[in-house]
Length: 256
Image (cartoon, rainbow, N blue to C red):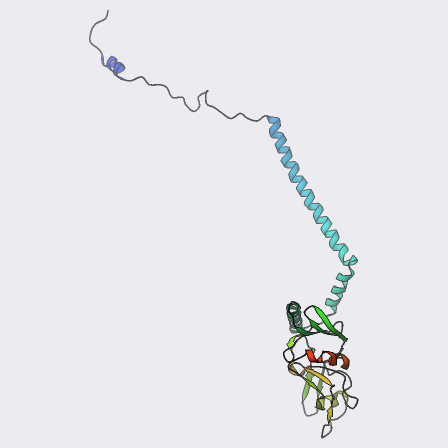
């Protein structure tokens, strides 16, 4: 039996509570996710590489097929060739092209409306009275040649090709027409001091368009104008007579 005074170290040992050791992160009992087998990793990598190669091959195949189709189409499609020839043959200024595109766009709008309108196809040389998308009357069209005439006194008359969207400004039947000076210049003759007035000299039926352009029936036999007015449009008299009640001031006219 031991007796005696307690030392300082003994006192600390008796008073301090017992501490439990905390495992360190690098302890051997830490839980970890199991690593996949090597064969599974290599298999997944091989599938990914194969998918990438297959996608590239498929894209290359589509590119080749598209290129072949584009090369074959111009040779096999007569319609596409015809469109290309028409575009190549069109010698339009920027203003004329803008006017033609505007006419086509506005005509598309009229196709959806229940109204009468006139379309003039200068390529097919056709005159049509249409109601929406329906053709009410169709006739052959004569287009006057564009021209410029100059008089000795310096006066000048220019008739440029007409394209675009317009409205009828009026209509005349049985018009008493004073023969203009340019008619004599066109015929290579000097104008007389007193130019005659000829009834139906420019046609029995005359549809007026802006800037002195017209749609007219053939001039009378006594008229010095033989055929269509320059840059205007001549339609058989029977066709203009048939559509006459349907044409009024404000009727839309599309020239393309």
